[in-house]
Length: 403
Image (tube, rainbow, N blue to C red; front, side):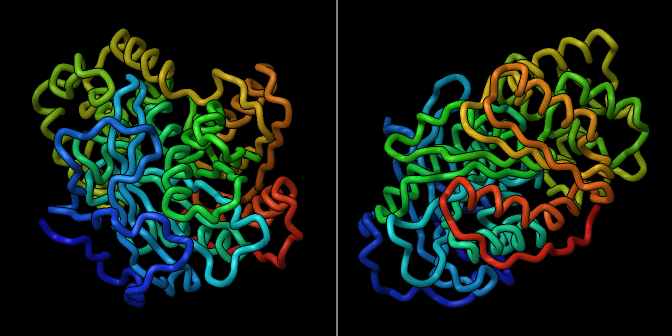
């Protein structure tokens, strides 16, 4: 067993060695990891969602403006209502909390991969520099931040990629876990996410009562994943090799959510073996490995198979099939080549049609999939401040390197 050490370039500063008055559970076990997989009790004791399993205090993190950083393991519930362990990160702004405690943003990350080494909690920048900038802006604006890895990403078993209930429950339940760790947090929280995380945030918002005494005040979905029924046919027909990573992750998520499916039964032996190799890599590395592939050959699925699989994926993963009872801001870059703007526009229309009372859309004409994070940050903070009762702080957009 190896005690968790942050990756190179990770948290600056060492834990202070003294517990603050805010920490409620000093007797919790330390988080430990072996070969990028967090160790969890076996069998997992039956506990309510949000119950902490372990926590490690990494002290002040200069990458996040001196915020105090924890890695946590906690209980959640998957789509089959099974108790599952999930890992994640908790970040607390430096200084004294405001009256009523820090409001919480449960920040949901976009696609990083499905291998345990891709878990944002194990990465100094939570998966990308753009994500680090966004989270730092949230902390500087006076929000505590929780960041779930989602089930199976960092914890035993395959990550249930794009299984909405799994991700949404984990995003909500880490808020409860953070309150067990830091009982002086405020009772307001927000779900905020990008891409895969935008989908996760909307699913978290569809079950706001999960977090007990705390109140979900609003949701921000940035370029949310949607239209899962069209994903595989679109990737196959695209002849864009880099898009295959999303298809393979989605098929791995399907096989994890429904054990009657396996990659070999879905793809056949040669394509499945190729997929397994790529699933062991994080997304940025996987892009490079895909450059020589033909999407038709890599996805040897008939039209009928694509339709049946797509229907199942849409049923568990489309985030616009139920109303959201709290205010929602949906953000989209018009130059996004990963999540088509037309799909996000349809999500907004569907949420409104279902009776979501306050769904607002913002589109950024020249922004790509990642660029929209920096361009939308001030609108995001204005939305949060409006619903948290904050006085807005000075804000400036930031730049991202990827489209």
